[in-house]
Length: 366
Image (cartoon, rainbow, N blue to C red):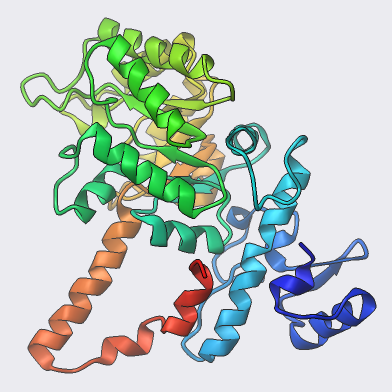
């Protein structure tokens, strides 16, 4: 789709270029003879600090109309995604599951780090896509909270329905937090991977926690067998499903970097595509894990005191950064603060920092 159409302009050719440059001088730049929005430029968003020219913020000083015009520019990045991955449909408005899976795999293979934020429903997924993120991942904790439950208290069928909602609401790759695949036995783990793929995913994870407080982690041998079963199920699919294997030592009472690395190396040998140890306590541990393994490493941001900058994580060797329930908690923080102001003070000052419907609507489906 021509960039001018993303800005709602009817002109074509030179007339459209002139209109774009007159009306959106800060949002459109000429690169190699082609007009591009900032999010279309060949620079990763994570390579620029917040507030840089390639980062769009919704300033309270801007009018709602002006802010609404900026969002289509961020969505325009999607056309360029196809150019980076051979075989992708340039339209991207009808990306197949295979194309999404290829795109997701390519994100792990290209140079540099990338961000994979975690929506909690279809609406938040569309907002994150509209802001220019290239892939999404579900969060078990955030999804459970939307049902009024704690992490680990949802069923497989509920998670699969949630996955379908997020996948159908967006047109970028989605990976899923599948917890322990809702099963102990390797064959049942494999079945969860198969069902998750049928729901439309480009990737998903299997972890080695049992959700049993008396035995929080699977034994090393069983944990490895479960990953191997998940890998076999993923490889049997007709597209490259990206499987992430998680070592949960630091979220369970076994905070050992040595055992974490031992498990991750075993999962790597079993065929996992991405390795993940949530809760690593410091950058030294992150570096140690990344150095020990050869597969891409995911780092989870979201724990106070244990969340590091993108630049620091990239220097440590991290490939992918996820956020677990952090964005959901940020949204609920806004809800709680606004509700407390209403209840205790009877004022509505929170509205001064709140998106209007005109701000929000461009992210949503017609």
